[in-house]
Image (cartoon, rainbow, N blue to C red; front, side, top):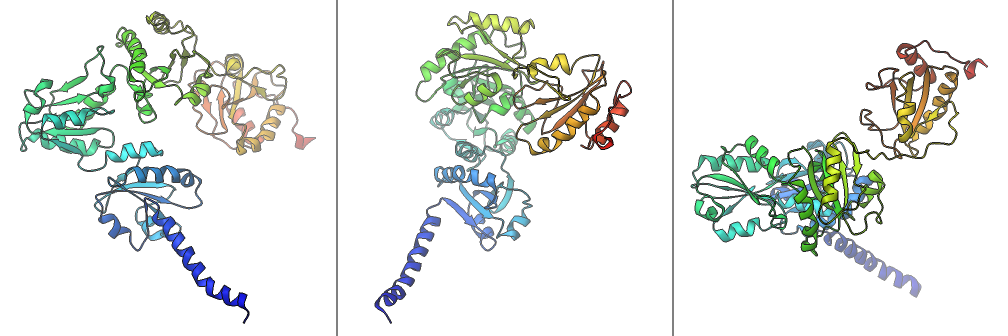
Length: 498
């Protein structure tokens, strides 16, 4: 046996041993628990609260979530456990919990499935969401110091004050906090004296807005004296939690944007520059007090955090407005407005903007491509600026396709849709059209959730477009239009007939 072969045979087991140690170290270096069919139940039962991700290694969404999930697990270490189950090798566990898509995230308490995880998929969002899941749904407070510590946070706090541990209202409060803990943070005291400096002299619930948002323009503490129930508490918190002008961020944007919302975008930073942040917020709030009964909500937001949206939704780059707040309004119906005048420190420009808005004198912002110089093809190209002229022409029936340039289904449809346009090119009463829905704002009465989406807008009924749900062959479209068109169709010869 040669010396080299002897050395290789001697080193081979050592190499495998080192590789095993490295692999083990790699797994052990993760703060995400890896669970499987053999140990899922026993390891989940051993922990009060666990967030479990059911995933597949090939899943792109799972791959994008992985670094965020790992970072969240590290930050939550010692508070809440994060775990994962590979469903490609642990089908029994994944089947037991009804996993049929990836990633699926579920929250477990003491070994039992408690709820689905519906929170953000970023490290910050997971940490914030799961901190609310740790420990009791409502934190017991035993002193004024406990209360001060609990409400001194960047989030709103809901605190119940009760006459004793046997209070019936306390029992209802704890039930409600258990149901609502995903969205809000709760605490309770069984000594009314703990809330004395906040005016507590009987059983009640107080909502404390975050201290960094305290302002002379509104009450910082809101009291509810209604009987406590889950529905009553949900309504009370929902109606009061944001106040006159909250800080819009990635966690609360869905809730805030469920209403007509004016947003002031600037360098909002409550960690590094709270004084400068509130300088502009107070000027927004001063004006907001004059319009708070008009049905419009207000918010401030960090411009850099939402820059991509500002460019996509409003065409605003970083240079627009400079260091001054940029003001936009977006309604629930999707209508958008931009304050063109520079924001003035006395707030007069914002007042004028709102007066014009409520008087319906503002021109709404519409994102639009430039209209094509020539539009003589069999399928008319529509942009947002020409939608009224082409699609809403009251004298013509219009079949309009909303598409995305990258959409494979749209590309497959294109030759058939072009042939349809050619077949109807001699018909003076009907227009076959298309619009790039990624580069143009879609009118609010057209619900476009995927691509391609096709609508028929009949002559004289432009406020009632009908979504086309039929087949996507040329004959399918023609059959549909023969039924729906206002006038009989004038068809040119088909390619197959040539």
